[in-house]
Structure formats: structure tokens, C-alpha cells
Image (cartoon, rainbow, N blue to C red; front, side, top):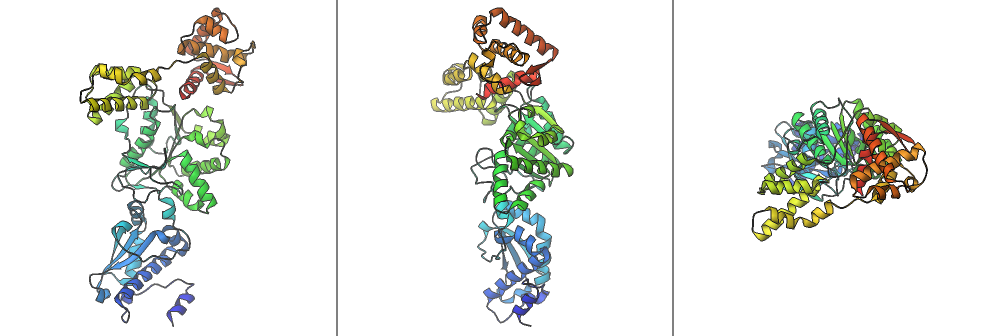
Length: 526
């Protein structure tokens, strides 16, 4: 039977071949080798199934032949599988090596071996004609990612954290973007622990050690307090404790973009496979999902799928779940079923520890008085501390002199002024109204209803804490009240804090400490 007839009879797929199929005399050497490659390719397609082969191989993989004796290919050689980048090559090899080896031995015999290479290391050009784009090209975010780099497209982007031997990283979902920067992943060992973040750190350690027990884990706090550090750290610790585990770290923006591209491009199965095959799925900037109905449904289904399998999910947000009404009640219920941990702005001990750790890592010698000065004056967040150390290191290098207290005071003068910027009464009012959805101007009105009076008293308390305004100024601003009213408000809110009372703010009841933290978060963000 003619070859074309054989292929047609088998539905367009070439049949399996005998070990002697490599001995195809009568053709040129080059044509012989290409024929062998095509036969191996066909045998692999038959073994995996046409659809599965197209999804995972497609045009992202090339198959060619390498033999020490081209004139006698039947004597043995190697089938070379060339993949676009090291990241995809490692994953494909781990997943499909046995299938490729079986296909090669079925076509060429047991004397033939299989070798995996990246496209950059070989000039192979034998490529299958795919039925649809390869999932590897859709899922792999970077064409030349080093196995020791953190891949960060755009600001937060998709991260393929540092891999340990024997571990694997789930390919990033479609649309993960281009490589912007590379830097080593932050580890938990370099995270400075103190009263402001101890609970969150403990929760991350438990999640890494006993995945699934407290899933999903939600870490929340204002910008610059170490949330991203913990997210990268748990990925590294997870792979150390669970060799071979699959981890995936994404920003909410990246998840959304990838999902929409997959949805509109008929690549939804590949996107879901990339997310739901992860043993650890970590998503940053949870608040970005608010109001995005289609994406929220996908997130909810992903949470359900991973939760059923006992996998670990970790989210990070810039605010507490109670302030994320835009996520919808269904997803919030699932998130509250896990563990939530807040990170406060760093206290003095944590700030000092950060300065010491960064200086030691850079080999920057700082006198104790300089460390104290930086930790005392850079109080808002960790990034501020890093900016100050960058300034000191550059100044020391420029002048060729060691860092002294006088140099620090002069070099950091503008940063200190910015960090210590004054808070105005209008800032307090806007923050309280924004935090609890209160109509602007209500706090300055004569209304005495509890839904307005409690927020007004809280605003007066915070005005005393965060501004230098006199009692009479505060009273006058908030409805032309006397200074004794401000004193009374400060005393009342102080008692609420001591007694851990719950208060009415707008149309909801709040724990007073959480209410204060929420307003202060808005103040810091503005």
C-alpha cells in the first residue's frame, strides 16, 4: 500500500514504526534524517493524542536527528528535542520524557537516545505543523529566563521564583508579558520580624510547612510594609520543604490580563491548567479584582478548585477584607474561611533591623548613631528606609568618605522633611469619610445622630494624635464645637480603645482599633 494511502487510512496520523524504520536507503542522508524526525514526531503525536500533542508541543518544539554516522543511521544516534527556552525545556522534559523516549524506541530501536536542548543551543529547524498554537508558547512568560532569576513583568508581574533542584515552577498563564527586570527572590530568612509583622510571618511559615491547613491565607497592610517580601519568601520556603512542588506567583493585574486574553483567544483551558496545577498559588494586590465580575468568577472557581485538592493559596491586599466589598460576598466568604493576618507599618525595632540587614548585605559601614537616625526619621515604610540607604551609599561613594552622622543629616534632609510632612485637619476629615463611606461635610455639620457623631469623635481623636492643631482649632473645624468637646471626644475614644469597644460608623459597626487602623491606612496612602 502506498505511503499516502496508509496515512489516509489512519486518519492522517502516521502509524507506529518498527525499529528498522531508520534504515531507509535510497534517499539522501539529509532526507533520511528528516524522515526519521518526522516519524518520531508522528509516533509521539499518536502516543499523546493529536490534541494533547498540539497543546504541549505544537510549534514551540522542534525534533531533529543527530547521529555520529549519517551513512548508517540504523547504527544508532540521538533524537534532539529543541525547546524555546530553558524554563519550558525543563518542564517538558520532566513531564514528557518517558513518552518521547518510548516513541523514539518504537521508531528507531533501543540503540537511540533522547537529548533535550534549548533553541539557542542548537540550529535544529525541523518543526511540526501544529493544529493550533502550543500551550508552552502561551504559558511561558519569558524567552530567556535564567533558573536563578525572579521574573517580574511590569511592576509586580508574573514571578517564576528561584527554583531548587528537583522543583518545578508552573508556566505562567497566557499574556504574562515581557521581561522587565530580574533580581534575586527575597527569602524569609532576610525578613525582619517584630511586633508589627510577627503574626503574618508566623502564618506564612505555617502555610509553607503545612500547606492547605490555613488556606487561603490573606496578608494585608499598607504599601511598603513587606507583603511582597513575604510572598516571594513563601515561594522559596515552599520549594525547599516540598521538592518538586509547583509554585506560581502573580499580581492580580497579571491574572486579570492573562484571563481576558485567554478568554478572547480561546486559550482558557491552558490558562486554567497553568493556575490550577499549582501546589502553591500566590496572588498580590487582591484589591485590584474589585468590581471585575468575570475575573472574580474565575478567581472564585480557581480558589474552589485548589481548595478541593488541598492546595495552598496566598493573597496580599493593601486593606482588610472588610474594606473590599467590591470582591463580592461569595469570594469574601471563601477568603474569610482561611486565615487573615495584618502587617502594621514597621516599628522602631523593625526599621532598625531593616537598616542593619541592608547595610550588611551591601557592605556599607554605618555607625550606630547613623542607624538610629535613619530608623528614627524614616518612619512610614520600608521603601523609605531603602531610599535613605541608597542616598547615603551614593553620597559616601561620591565624596570618598565614610558615612557619619553629619553626612547623614545633610544628605537626608529633604527625605526627612518629606517623611515628617504635617497632617492637616482636612486630611483627617477626608480619611474618615473615605474609610467609612460617609458623605463629605457630615463631620462639620450640626448633626448629632450616632452614625455621624461617632465618626466625628474618632476624627477629633485622630486630629489630636496626628496634627499639632490646638483644641479650639479642632473643635471649630468639626462643627464649631468648644475645646471641652474635643477633650471629651479624646477621652471617650481612649476608653473605647481600652475596652476594645465596637462603635457605629456610618451604617456599620466596627471594632474601634480596626476603625482607627483603617483611617490611618488611608492617611498614609494619601
